[in-house]
Image (cartoon, rainbow, N blue to C red):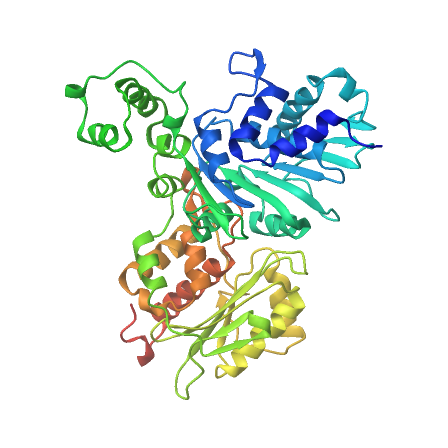
Length: 501
């Protein structure tokens, strides 16, 4: 069935630039404001700024409650109902957030003229996450990043990924799967508040560009809190402002009322103010998410790493220093569940005298495969000692090393083969690794390892580990390597212990 003339006119109007689209959104869409009142979707300053610079692929770094999710939902909803054959998907960080987005879109449909809702926009299906318009062969879906396989098997014309910095699990992998479903001419919006200088969203932001355009480049949009007119408080007079506050007034034209609101944020949020109410696109990342290691040392060494001398196993195995006769080496193994969909396993090869990183393996391997790979490296490096973290799947790896690979040169703690990471030993291991990163960063050659160090964060009650969506297998393998090396130094009477850091 043909679209009604009203939808045709709307569709043509949306292609005439941002101002016309903003007017049509106001005319056609209704939403609830902060007080719960139903009103037209009138673009605020943040939404206007986004629309004026929008490209085909966009990434939005923003303060809290700037209305971007609602605006993107409205834009994509209008495109879905004016372009036959359109499939739109919005992906939120939690199921609750996904349900909230769907309610926004549901209300937009409910407030359309009745002749459209009962005519070309009649729905054959409308549940908690899906609207199907059979007359247009179009569909609007909302999902959660928690949903396994979200977006798979689809051919998307519009994709909105919300609060990406807070996606659970491997956010980069989830995002890659969704991108693969986006049509070449499709529109993409990645949007989030900051959550530490690490993870998929941070990496996407760093790789994006600052200028708008219609090409494939990802366009940056930074939306600070003061674009929201409701963010005002008790007026602060110019003479009572701090040096930082006066600089903000001079640079961005903030009012005394906005400075008053900012002071209220500092009282309410403390150190989290820059995370929830971003003021610039650099410090908002660095002020959030506490990296366990010295960030400056990591980033300096990132620029100084030696070139890779050898690449094997499709890039999984990197070699910087091949074995030398007369040198002793240590092979440290961090195991994983394995398989194509499992976590990464990691192997670090270091020089026992200097601690210098010689080779590194990061690959999804089953315990039997990991045992074989570790033994091959150990034999290559002069029948090196193998130290396997025996937690979890490590016991299986040790069994395969001894029973299937017939390798006996294993590090032992007492009678038990392998290294046991405990609540007591882990803080010591990671602290030692942090000390090495600060005092002799030149011993670390892997950008993969350094990247994981950047996303290794401290949590509640002293717990440490990979930030949400990141990995720490390389970090833990290196921590085991350096901890075992130090244990061997303490118990060794050999001359190789001289010069140990």
